[in-house]
Length: 107
Image (cartoon, rainbow, N blue to C red):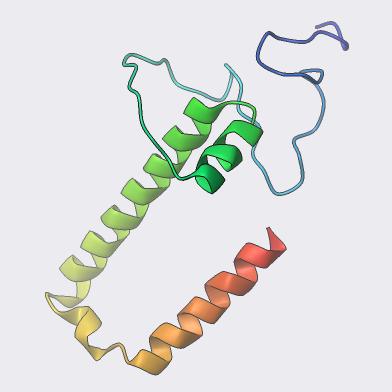
């Protein structure tokens, strides 16, 4: 593999490490694509997707993460029964939001 090879969609060499906090998307990280769609995004999200180097891969990864979260929530409901989340207090939600915000700042 030539070390200075560039592909048509990236401005940096393929061997270059991904940008800090961002996952690099290329043809080796994506399963085969079968359907093309057009979407509209708020400017900040569109910019973030484009900055990833492969907006389609970035969005596909985000959708897979959403599926993983939904599946996890369904598993919790199967484990603890319907309404398990009713015992979560506003203080619990605020703490979770702070934890998620601090994790996002690190990434």
